[in-house]
Length: 149
Length: 88
Figure 1 (cartoon, chains in turn purple, blue):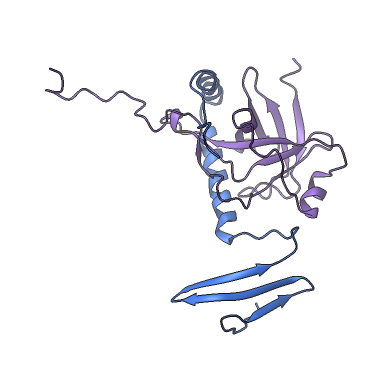
Figure 2 (spheres, rainbow over the protein chains, first blue to last red):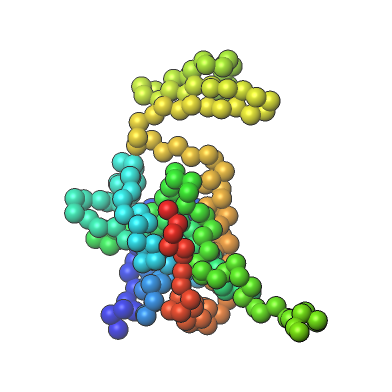
C-alpha cells in the first residue's frame, strides 16, 4: 500500500537527546494526520508525530532558517518543507498527551533530509495539550454523597 | 573558556558582527543584550536540554503497545479535537 510506504530521512545532526541516531524511517499512518519516525539502527527509538498544521492553520506558515539549517535540509528554491511535531503520549491517560510546538521537525522530502529546530518564539509551548478537553476531568468524578437532592 | 570582567553598559565584541552588552545586574540576575545577525541562532542553553528531555520522554511513551496506542490516538484525534482555536 502506498500510504504505508516508509521513507528514509537523514537527520545529519541527529535529534536532540538522540544525537547519535542519524537515519530514521518515516511512515504515515492511515486515516489520521499521524506518522511514526523510527531510528533505523535502534528499535527502541521511535517517535509519534502529529501534523500540527492540520489543527493549527497558522502554525509556522513561515519560518526563518539559518544558513546552517538550510544546508542541513539541502534546500533549493521551490522546496516545500513538511512540518511535524513530536508527541509525548501519556500512556496512563492518553487525553493528557502533548505535542511539542516549540521544537518542530522540518522534513524535506525532495532531499530526504530532516532537522529538529527550536523556535525562538516563546509563545509556542513545549507541551501543548492535544485534546481540547484535557483539563476537564476525563474520568467522571464520583458524585459526592448528599450532592443530589 | 575565556573569562572577562565587565561593568554595566560595557560590551564584548565577538567576531565581526556580534556584540554583547551587560544591560543590568541585580543580585545574581544579569540582563544581557545581544546584537547579532539574524542568521545566528540565540537560545538559552536550558532550552536545548529541555528539548532533549522531552524527546527522551516522548520515546519512552511510545515503546509500549505501539499498535494499540496508535489506534487509540486515531480514534481520539478523529473525535474530540483539538487546540484552542482562539490561541494567537
